[in-house]
Amino acid sequence: MLLRDVWKSYAFLGMSINILKGINMVAYRGEVVGIHGPSGSGKTTLLRIIAGLVRPDKGEVIVDGYNLNMLDEYGLALYRNNVCSYIPQDFAVIDTMTVYENVEVPLLLAGVDADVRRKKVMEILDYVGLKDKANLRTGKLSGGEKQRVAIGRALVTTPSVLLADEPTASLDWSNAIKVAELFLSIKKDFGTTIIIVTHDARLLEYVDRSMSLFEGVLKQISSPRL
Ligand SMILES: Nc1ncnc2c1ncn2[C@@H]1O[C@H](COP(=O)(O)OP(=O)(O)O)[C@@H](O)[C@H]1O
Ligand SMILES: [Mg+2]
Image 1 (cartoon, rainbow, N blue to C red):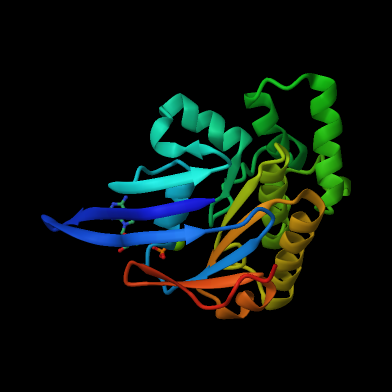
Image 2 (cartoon, rainbow, N blue to C red; image 1 turned 60 degrees about the vertical axis):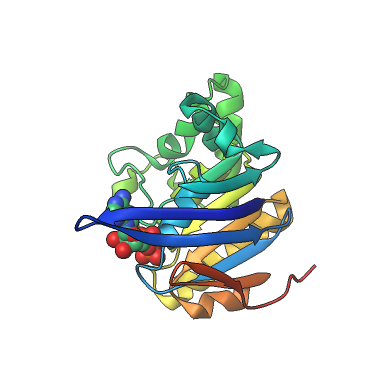
């Protein structure tokens, strides 16, 4: 993944405020990168740009050979469903649907055949440790379990990139460690490139490489562990 000179500003009280000021970044295939920054530093904006949910004002994002500037809205929808999965901070799981149904959604959108869908969803639920809860309503689960549903739903399409927005923000530390370890297993088992943004510096101990985002500037704070 390559980001080259990515800029983004928002209008605030009639003024244009630069949120991202020329972000340059490389993430290698199968690398887990942690980006640490305080609240309001632009972490979510950066992830949403990589996810193709927000267009930058300037600059390029190239993921798996796709230059996002070259994709129209339909192309970006396919990109999100096939190449790059984004896990929002609030998980965005649907409480009234079962665990199984939540994880199945991306495959339904992709028009995957029913038998293949069933096999794939069960495989992923087993992987994230929720096989026994497949038929429970997601609203009944704990925060840690909901996060696993969101991770399962992101992983079911076997994306090459997984983006996680503050994945441990609403978890206690022991559940946070479990989630961090799950990301490391995903990288190992699926070869996924994983970008985790967090305001919790403790999480950086679990990633291959860390960066900091502060006042719109991204800096590397540790070298690649390759
Ligand atoms: N859609 C938007 N419109 C206007 N301002 C926004 C929008 N999204 C984010 N911002 C502003 O951009 C800044 C960075 O936000 P965000 O990317 O959510 O930071 P973080 O995730 O690090 O907390 C904040 O000041 C926020 O208010
Ligand atoms: Mg955020």
